[in-house]
Structure formats: C-alpha cells, structure tokens
Amino acid sequence: MLLSSLLAVPLIGTIVVSSINSYKKTSEAYTKTIALIASVINLIISLVMFIIFNNSTNQFQFVQEHYNIQLFDIYLGVDGISVYFILLTT
Image (tube, rainbow, N blue to C red; front, side, top):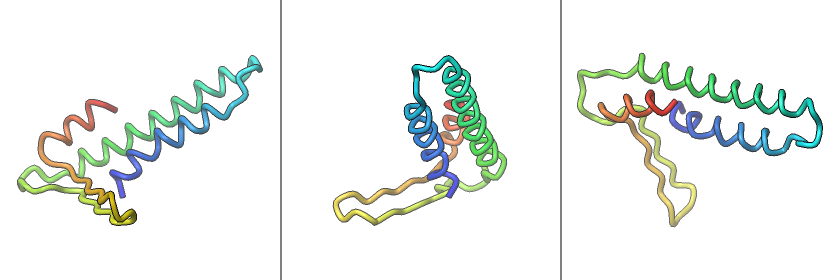
C-alpha cells in the first residue's frame, strides 16, 4: 500500500495542478501550495517506509503484486539499497 501511494500522490498532485486555471493571479499561489502539499505527503510516506524497513533481512519488503491487466504484471518491492534511493528522491 505504501509503494502504490508513493506513486499515486505525485500523479494526483500533477493532475490537480494542471487542472487549475492559469489565467488568474491567485492560481500561482494555489499551484505552489498544492505542489508543496503533494511533496510533503510523499516525503512523509517515504520516511514511514524508511522507519518500518527491517535491515536484518535480505529479501524484498513492501511487496505488491498487481495482475489486473493480462499483458502487464506489475511487481513492486523494496530491497536494502532501494529504500535509501526512495528516501533520496523524495
């Protein structure tokens, strides 16, 4: 659930930001606020993942498998080094 929300929050943020009418002067403030909120939520999710992560095992953690589309099987997981990369990119 954490990995899919880590992917969904920036997508939802970009959809909301791109749907704001850019002709008004107040839209710049709304755009910056929404982008900041999406970034902070993404940072909080990645910090929670970093805190919960168990370094004593060498297997994938936070594993999610999605077989909704027959041609595309989506398999998400975090290993020891990618948890640092997730934290670095947020």
